[in-house]
Image (cartoon, rainbow, N blue to C red; front, side, top):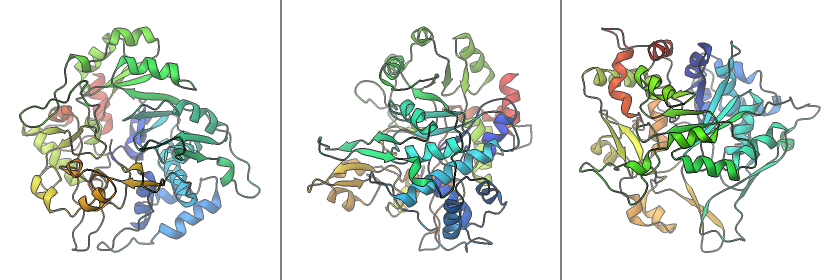
Amino acid sequence: MGVGVSNWRLAQAVSRIGQLGIVSGTGLEQVLARRLQDGDPGGECRRALAHFPFPQMRQRVLELFFVPGGKRPHEPYKTVGQAVIKNHRWLDELYIVGNFVEVFLAREGHTNPVGINYLEKIQLPHLPAAYGAMLAGAAVIIMGAGIPVEMPRVLDLLSRHEAATYTIRVIGATPATDCQRVFDPAAFIEEGQTLPPLGRPDFLPIISSDSLATMLLRRSGGSVEGFVIEGPLAGGHNAPPRGPMKLTEDGQPIYGARDVVNLEAMRKVGLPFWLGGAYGTPEKLREALDAGAAGIQVGTPFALCVESGLEPETRRALIRKALAGEAAVKTDPVASPTGFPFKVARLEGTLSEEAVFERRRRYCDLGFLREAYVKEDGTVGYRCPSEPVAAYVAKGGKVEETVGRKCICNGLFAGIGLGQALPDGTREPPIITLGDVFAEVGQFCTPGQLDYTAADVVRRLLG
């Protein structure tokens, strides 16, 4: 669920009541850095860090980012640097620590399993991020927005504290191009330290076709424990339609019969699967179970509950729209620099409004969704179609690829109250992603109330 919406509080609340709570693994190094700069008001981050197994690494993070009492509101957050293929030890440390903190807090105070969700498209942090989550005891790793064929083998290696590699997609790469991200846990061992034993998390790739399930099982170098089947009604990034892209009159992708997963074929695969994408109602849960699914993946109803990381006023404004019959979500084919269709909830003051989008000055300081490419001199560079147009074109990008591209990275941080302070005294405008079930979230509210809990969602779904 974007960045920090499915945070540790939400995942913990869901796991405590016997379901599988999943934290969003996107940008957790930046989430931790900004929480610490805000003073870590509840002390949760520092409490988790006190249990982190590498004390010197923990101290370096605190010394650089923790601001007692919090930074002043108009001051910008410190940036933590942008990932590159060549190892950057400091960033690797922050990936490890950020993922550890989120999973540790989600697991605190109960013994039920907790998982973490990554986007395969954001490849550069995968190895240290997964290692940090495993240090904290993540029981499940879910991965979508790509074909994560290498991840099962990676989890096997990291569970033994062994070095792992991950192949990075590089536009224009040749056999001589360095496309391997390398991570060795042994490089982070501190003097006199014994590494703790690690469990190997279950791996559940997110798929949009039964043929992809078969391919992953055939090509993966490690075990796959099941699948999450996500349809085009789910929030966040969606798989593009199969075949030529066709759009509705208001510019949304048209999905057809080829985009429906063959559940009979999935049953023959013999592994458990969960259905996601507008399954957040009791009726759809029963439908999923009758179709042979082990259960459902639910995002949007939890994204709008009180434990969610969304800013409270933003969350309530969205619920008001749902209750008034004004909920609207656009599947935007160009908003995300990834090229994947991206669900954008319509809300005043956010990047869903054309005027807000046009006013925003383009810049790229987070860079989660940058793509690697080979420069004229043979070295690897990085670019994003949401960065300033002139900069993108100077790096070999096409100007038409920049049209309509939104800064998903900064917008999602703004949605959880961690938006960057800008030189003119304003803050980054948010972007909110929700699934099509947004229109039905009123079912979880008590009449006259805008707030509901994760437990309310579970009770309603289970009847």
